[in-house]
Length: 196
Image (cartoon, rainbow, N blue to C red; front, side, top):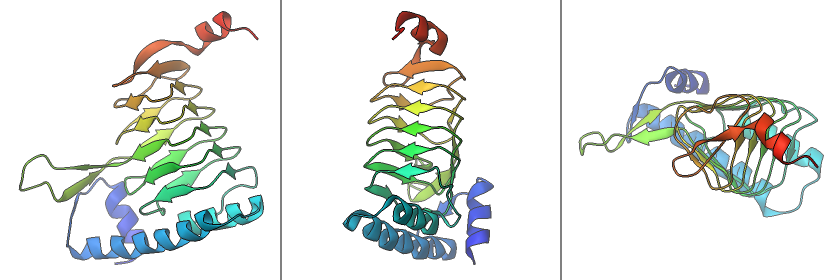
């Protein structure tokens, strides 16, 4: 099995059993991700070098407007898509087998976790993984230490407060926070209260 078939498997929402043939392909690409992130995180790199290494990590060219402050962590890497003018701060974790899309203008704070996999609940399915994609809309701001769980879409221009655990979709132009994350107010309401 090649990378395209593996990505199709995940993107079609199919589960995977540990120890299966397809799992062996995943392990191969996980080792590649570990090699690239070790290089990226192990020493100083110019902005251009960072973009080059991230492009290698995700298997597609990132835009010249992309900025990342290492370190970054991922256990796969090949199912991440990054738009233009995206900023990712240091120490973020991308569990991207289920797919992570970050659209134009998104800001990702320190230590944000994107988790696209779940395990089965029963003993019989505990070693099976179930993927679901995460989509971060345009101009979204995700605060430090937030966790975005499988299947979540964060709508355009939304804000996720620091430390939030996002378990369900976030409407565009809203602010959510807490554990689990709940609606706090609209972005427009926050702008009126905090005119600077």
